[in-house]
Length: 337
Image 1: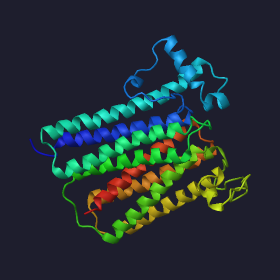
Image 2: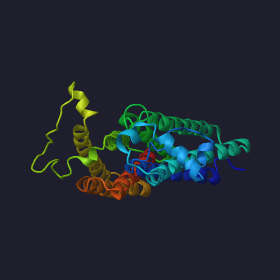
Image 3: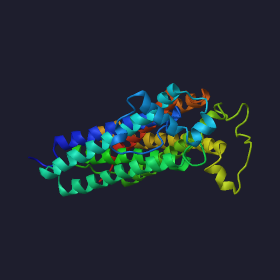
Image 4: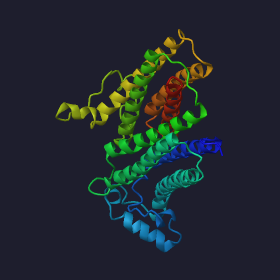
């Protein structure tokens, strides 16, 4: 059988779709404050949720031992607990499914010699990223089980960003197989795309910071952060000052807003410069889709802030970031050697 065939491509694309679904469910889990509902980690038996009243009571009693219940949710009934348990359970089950979908077909393709040596090395990197992502998920949850009733926004950012990068890497490997023949490229233009890509990754990290510190619930005005005020008047200033850029919710929201403008400007510049180049049809489509998506994502961000992060808008905004990263990855791939 031919190596790196269509079945391998379908496998990688399936992995991309599952990672996308997992990030969406992860966003719902975060926005519904469900992430700390399961306080232990059982790789095999944890796949099966409580099935009777006794098991639900045991799970609820375990939850009651930790800060989130004691400091925030002491009014919860077992029915309230069940509603948040569902999203975290689903998030973890999808994570396990992704692991199986990556590992089992990989071993099959390996045994039947359907992978080239180059693709094998790339897939091993993907497997490592997937395993590391699972570790970061539990590492993040642990931070909310000690003193504070919330997870570390640093660990949340690491968990979310790794998911985005794992998706991008998987998509890149699939694109390598779909489009094995690369086209001549303009190095300067490719470097502009790389710079824009890096800024987008930083913006995604700050989006995770905003989510982790619930900074989207503050300063719900646009284009000014507060009514008639360009900058916010924060209630407190952290010392040293740089902490206001990574730990102060007001400062983090300001940076996230500012980076949004920068991302838009970068993609508009790419679009204008691309019009002066001789491009393939796919390269043109990649740039045009980027322009459409960044405009749509910007509007989603504005409405998410104005309406103080309702669930559907928060999830849509995260999905928009995912689509934008997908388009950026595709475009960069089309301009790569």
